[in-house]
Length: 417
Image (cartoon, rainbow, N blue to C red; front, side, top):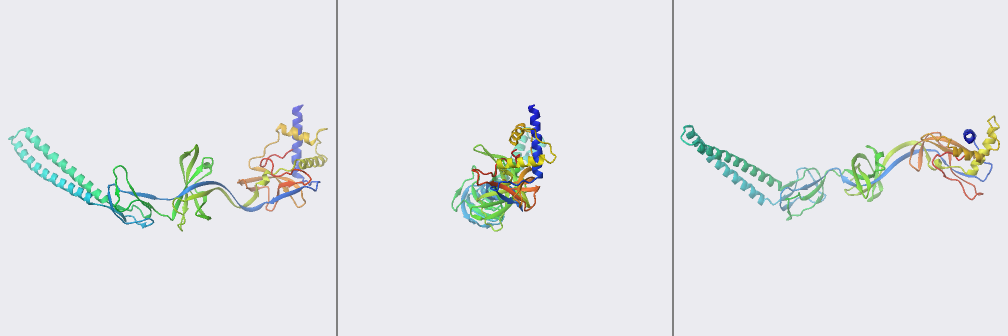
């Protein structure tokens, strides 16, 4: 019996729902007033926010591979430099001494090899005539080959000394701007364990990038090529455009919060943007232009319960007298509501379909089903079910009651039968 009653209640509620959509309703109580919004053409976006730091696309730290005293520094902060331009020069005196010493070692090794070669040739001739022992010949051959190896080693040391001498002159590896100069004339630099930082050069400040941190909850929505708009504190009224150029896979964990580095391109033709600035960015993950837009309040609106009960009673009264099957004897609207909701028989709306309530020029309410697209919390895109200019109810009130209905209930949830 209980199952039969629930089926009956579900059938009755379904009939009421159909009649509600087919028959507009006008409240008999004149005290109700409605707040509406119009469906309008406009733009709608769904976005993700992130913060990051502006950097030059290519930044090179210039150092030195040899130790010594800085003799001359030829550039300063913010200087424009060309590839191959001399930036600084170390004192070459000790390095030149090493070159000369290495040259002397080469000359000495060459003299040694000449002597050992002559000795070897004499011993070879005697050995071939069986005039010397095998051991004497082997010793001469060893001395000659050993002198050749010594000459090769001396030449290598000489070449290394010349390279070190060349390293005393510091050249710019790229075209760019000097961001940092970390040395002064007369300063001693030591390159024994690591390369001392002398200059930092940015390649092209007309093209920058933002290295932003995106939360793991949002990273799945970020795609290459998406439009980005960001601001910096130095120019609070200016908005700069860019796009997502790289999504790095390496996670960054800070205080158990996981983020991912996303790179945004940032054209900088006026050179307003500087390296190190903090950027507050908005990534537009969905964008629609010139589409129907409705306030999100409309999806969350549910009419007042008393008002809804009046609608149900009037629809039931009119509808069931027009050839529709009558409800079971003694079944009241509130009883139908309770049994119907308890049964859970009301089918959920399809994904992307929501309820809204319309108000026409005669102050009538009627439910409508709409298909939505982009939704950003404040507004929603309407794909079908409404036309431009339609008035959709977002709130209602009755001065005679202590409470009023507004944006109650879940977005687009089932109507309260």
